[in-house]
Image (cartoon, rainbow, N blue to C red; front, side, top):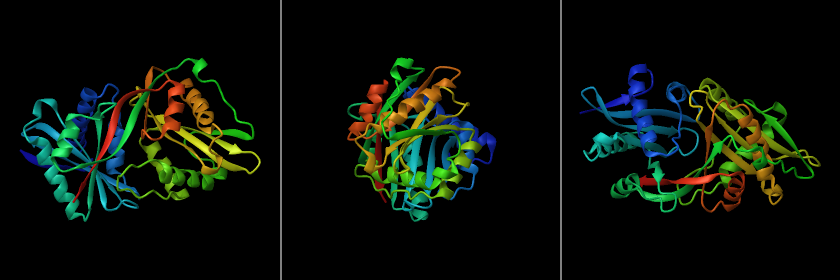
Length: 328
């Protein structure tokens, strides 16, 4: 058996690497999540100011036994590397995951990283228990944060998407690019989201968004073939962008869509702006669907206001995503 380094530039190697990850997700998750092949390749091969991605594979002859996907943060959280390890069912309990983890730890230390973190996507919706969780605990990882994974199967009846306008606020919507007139205020909302979203006990530094980072993220999404729907509300008296939500996906995996962020500026909370932006954004998203799909979202259990909004729209819990950390 040998460890193979993957940077996405060899299409055949990357396809084999990616198929291990995708197969495991489809086997383990009722509603598979994650990037498609081309999205992942663009992320791994591109030059990005905020992150670089690469991977490792454990290969026996021509057979790929397991893989590790690595995200190396470059602007914030520069002491952390995020890892996802996936091992095919027929190759488990042979030390594959441990062999990959040892190689990841060596690389992380060589790069000066202090924290190794990773999400287990397959936990029970109530307890978070899974084989992945047992492995992480056995290898010294500490459970730091949990998020409830909820799914909404689309399309939903129009009766579930009744607009709930809030007096004193007006809707604005856009697709792939934030309008220049709202760009500065949108950076404030994105940074506020990064600061205010519950993180549990995880080691994390909130991202400080800039207009340049937003434009880079938009360009990356387009290069990946992804699409985005954004709905925001403006406080008419002050002209302040008060809340936003974003949803999207890619035509290459039309069965899986993502609810990215929903955020309400602190000074405008308590006005039911969360559902005021989510319902019309969901209507715009599903109006363009060519087939049924699942819309995925994750929230910390303590984020009860957002979970209540999701419940009202028809989301249901399917799993718990748990974040584990290993102090190197």
